[in-house]
Length: 299
Image (tube, rainbow, N blue to C red; front, side, top):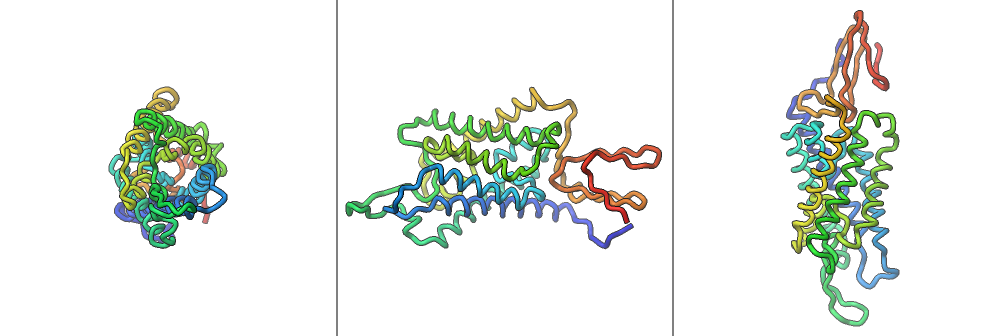
């Protein structure tokens, strides 16, 4: 039985993942940083809560758009966690990370291109007719009174919280509690950022920090936003993996050849989503036994 659709090659599948993460991370920076753009001397002064909520809603939008295609990592440290758990092969993980960094740079580049200079300039004249220098738009920098060690610690802990949320979502014991996952992740990001933004800008994402740093030319203690999130991701991943992962758990594997996998059996066509957990098929007395919530199309 054939439906006329051409099976995708491995290269096409990898390209599909790359484009999804590229577009998703680009939109994250474009929407999130555009919400942070405030003209000098504007009143009232915008609270950091607004910026945190803006990024949370941007995550919600991006997850809703690409989660069914690539899993919507949008963040290299999330990809690192999926590699640690065996959900994504290391080579595919590299594809994800390259897409995220390049997408973040392009997304922020569009901000610089499309917004008026008053929103992105680093120097301006305030109401007292004094020239003031400010950090470039959307650049993540620690509070001046926060030490490098403290900033790394804050980024590590907050990223660990984010990764623990991811681990709980990936856990197959939690498979029935993933409704409105985009909303949940958006609120998680907003909630964490509301707490950490005054101290470290609440990044938790090396790609999110890299794009603005590159295009603004501001690298002050930028390494914090690599070291902290990576440490937090690795620590949280192994914490959950060692303590809570079920024996022989191999769900959510993303490989080159099994994306859009189509299995034909007599009159049944079984379609598997790229995002959903990999499932086991059991054939008993020539009948296909499937787990719950598997889509079966009958001709």
